[in-house]
Each structure stands twice: as structure tokens, then as C-alpha cells.
Amino acid sequence: MSVWRAGAVQAWLEVVMGMPMYIRACSENVKSGKVLLGLTDEDLELGLGIVNPIHRRKLRLAIEDYRRAEGDQGLSKASEMDHHWVATSWLSDVGLPQYSQTFQSHLVDGRVLNSLSRRDLERFLNIGDQFHQTSILLAIQLLQMLSFDKEALQARRTKCDHQDWDPIVWTCHRVMKWIRDIDLKEYADNLQGKGIHGAVMALDPSFDTDAMAKALGIPSNKHMLHRHLYEEMKLLAVPHSNAEQSNEVIGSSSPVAVNRFAEDRVSVRRTSKSPLRLRANSQSVERSLGFHGSCGSLPREARLQAVPRTKGSPMHTYKSVEITNV
Image 1 (cartoon, one colour):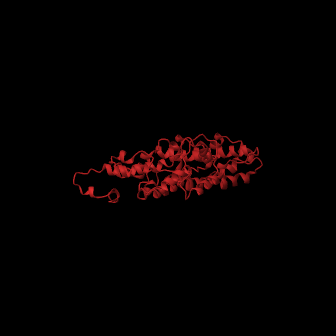
Image 2: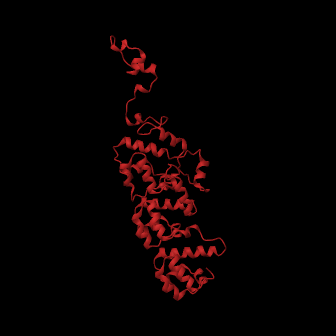
């Protein structure tokens, strides 16, 4: 940037930054890339007339990125995420496309995303819903964990398109597919516009079965559906003893715990004959839901002893095997 002439500066501002509305002021005040590199936030506001604080931040962060790149470090990966991609593709994957116009008008790109706080979301982008704020911040955290490498993120997502694992990178659409796959398809579309994506499920400690059921619109009196959802979500959790596997999934040294499917648990879920796909070694569902036990799970001898037989009962005339068959 330090060797750019005025024409290159104006072309960069219009084409790369997507800010043609400031070309005139730039052409009158900024005659070289060296001058551009030295601009402060005050210069951007008073000299170029940029009153929108997010626009100023976008330009200032870009200048700082180019300033670091002067030392042969190269531009950050966040520079590859322009505001069109953020406002359309990224927000759609997060599950909050209703904010697309707001992000578009504020020209929020990858660098700006990396700087956003909860206060910024509420003050500048008019996002008042606290869960929506959390959803966006966790999606940003996922990008930070991957160093804003868009290609690496897409590669991870492609690998789990048809496999139920690595849920931290799941988009909202992939979560909805999972909901359909676990036989709750009638509730899947209720997740549209809710901001439920893989990073929320994996990184938000307060997001539990009740939160998911509420987002899906499952009535609170549907106890068996709640239990079914609980068991399926439990399959996503990685035990703390599998720390090495978690680190492999993250692909970085981040200390954040990441949920992921364990292959043996997937096998249990797929081979289970129960329509609720409940695991044999889990806490008794019947007990928690108020069901009564059955003799059917006992050994043959115990079942025979458990059947009350009054004197003269016709059952006395049958052999044990016949009684079992009946």
C-alpha cells in the first residue's frame, strides 16, 4: 500500500472495500497509499466525512491489516471475507438471515466481525435479542478458532454433510437436517431465524435439551419427545477423557471444549431397534417417565417364577417352553 498512487487508493476503496460513497472525499484528500496508511479514526471522520462508526472501523482495521502486511506478513484471512459474503452466506449459515440488510448497510466484513462485541451488536447493529447476540458471537468465535480460514471451515463442513460428527462446524441448515434425521422432522422448520447452529450447541454451556426443545416448539407436556431429544443430544457430547480427539477436531490449541460424535455412539444409535433409540446402559427411561417394569427383560426361569399360578390353573398343564412361547 505504501507505493500506491491516488488512482490505486480510489480503486481499492471502491472495488475491494465496497465503499464508493467516499471516493470523492478520498480523491480530494488522499493522494497516496502512504498517506492512507497514516490515517487515524479522527482523520477518517473529519477528513473523509465517514460518520458511520462501523464504516470507520472497517476502514481503520483494513489500514492496520495493510500496515502489518508491509512487513511481509501478508494480509489476514479475515480480509478474504467481504461484506457481501458476511451478509448473505455467513448470516444464513448462522440462522439469522433477518439481519442481512443491517449487516449489508454497515458493510460488515471479516475484519469487523472479528472486532464485534455484544455492545456493538446492540448499539450499532440494533440486535436487541440476547440469544441472537450470543449466537452471532459464538459463530465469530468459531471463525477465530479457525483463524478465519474460510476454506478450512468449508472443508470441515463438507466432511460432515452426510455424517453426524464434528457438530461444532454445523450450519443452521445442517442442524435442521439432523433434527429431521432423528425423526423430529415436523419441528425442524421451526429453527429458521432462531440462530441455532453447531457452535451454539457445542460452546454455549447454557444451551441444553430444554433450550433446544423450546426453539423447536416441542410442547412441554411431550415428555417422551423431550427424553428422545435429550438422548440424541447426549450422543453429541465428547467425554472429557477424549481430550486428544477434541484437539484434533478443533485443529488448534484453543482451550475451548468442542463437542463431537464418537463413532461407537453413532453405531449404537444406528443399530438400536427402539423407535426412541435409547441406549441400554443409560438411566432407565421407563423409571423417569413413570412407566412400570416388565418381566420380559428377566431370564426365562425368573419369568416363569414371576407368573402367579393359582391351583388348577390351565397353565400347569403346559411345559416351560410352551409357556414361554405363549
